[in-house]
Image 1: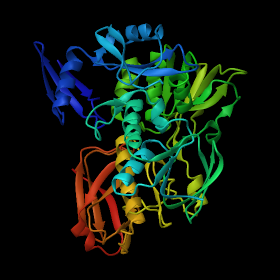
Image 2: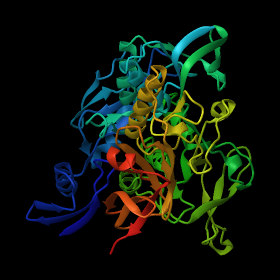
Image 3: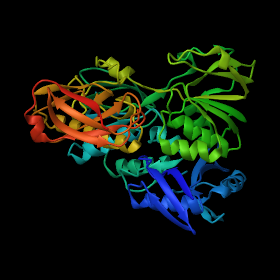
Image 4: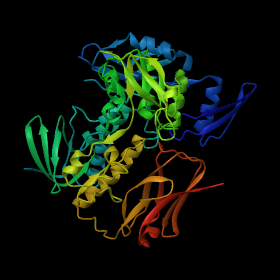
Amino acid sequence: MKRNLTCIICPRGCSLTVELENGNANVTGNACSKGAEYGTQECLCPVRTVTSVLRVSNRRDTMVSVKTAVAVKKDDIFRVMEVLKNTLVTAPVEIGDVLLQDVFGADIIATKAVK
Amino acid sequence: MTQYDIIVIGGGPAGMAAAVAAYDSGVKNIAVLDREEDLGGILRQCIHNGFGLHKLGEELTGPEYAARYAQQVAERNIKVYYEAAVTNVTADKIVTVQSREGLLKFQAKAVILAMGCRERSRGALNICGTRPAGIYSAGTAQKLINCEGYMVGKRAVILGSGDIGLIMARRLSLEGAKVEAVCELMPYSGGLTRNIVQCLEDFDIPLYLSTTVAEIHGKGRLEGVTIARVDANRRVMEETKRYIPCDTLLLSVGLIPENELTKCAGIAISALTNGAEVDENRQTKVPGIFACGNVLHVHDLVDYVSDEAEIAGCGAAAFVKGELNANKTISVRAEGGVRYVLPQMVHTDCGHDVSLFMRVAAPTGKVRLVVKIGDAVIAKAVKLKTAPGEMEKITVKADKLAACTGTITVCLEEMA
């Protein structure tokens, strides 16, 4: 099976061609090794980093931005969002703080400090 | 009147990087003025990732990228004025500021303009129809959702496929809204291909090219929009009109550099870039006033903003130290296939390589970017594909530059 993809690792956006054979992927069109990794991953098990915001319970009108520490399965994106929607955090928060552990395989970490 | 060697107007990515670079070049008496309560500018609301791959070698979110530079500002003895709105700048570099302490006047030796952009609004588009609630510029919706925690609607149409529009299509989808369509007036998207893939295709959001919002419907709250295809002259084709029910319309229809202060200082604005014309140090035609970032021209990547701001910061520091002595100026002009080139002026005796940044007029396949002086080629580069949404760069070597007289031109040459 052959698939044409656009690499989303960097703004260069290489046009990749991935040939799948018995679970092995052969990637061409990539300008770097990350592109080969992306092409393989995208065909075998696509993943994405999810970014969103959590409400801060002890600060008025304040949100703290967060990201998944590692990319989660594409199929789990909305499940992750459902968990985040129902989560309140308490300030202070520092960048890099783990606010939730192991949400569909990824820790949720703060990308913004709230004093 | 308080004196500063360098005053930086705007504490976004451009202002922060310029201030840090100027400080590290040996000019220590620096002030950064920002109208918000925190540094970071628009990055504060850009919670998605993808920032910093070029500049920092890692993938960061907007707030993280901003925090890296805010940290560098904090580590240096740079004075930051928060909630300080600059109301005037003169060619003599007197800066008037509305601040917490009242109206202040500062005298600077050099000024760096880093005010960024604002968004084009509905008023600029002349869309027919009523004036209901539910119509936002994409950046306003982004701020409401990401910074203030207010969701803007449940069913949305987005006009404009620039990066902000694409990012917001994904953001609305993640927050549970249904994005019915992204409409783009042009026959191609203005956004990065990676954003079309990860923001639209991932969420099965259709992108309609050569399509616009022709009418807005609803009283009180938006009830729907009529979209239609446009012809080659961008005129609505009546027979293609189609109604889409929605309660929210986001406009991502272009950014306007905020050059009111630039004009106050008597600096002319280029019709091509909507920013000042600058030389290789990002110095405007008013000596000692520099410009960088989105106020100079709209960038697609913050990494390039930081690079450009460092050039302006180093240039301003050199100006204060009396080290900007090159005086052989020639102009740089965009020709066939290239919409604009920056810088618009270059000193041939500056003694270092100069990078030219440009945007193409329309998407192309494989082309050669050629920099010429008269008929002589002084730099060239092959690009497999180009698009107006992706800034291109080409460097002219110092020795080639030193021999130049006349006007430098940059054009595209097609390749088989």
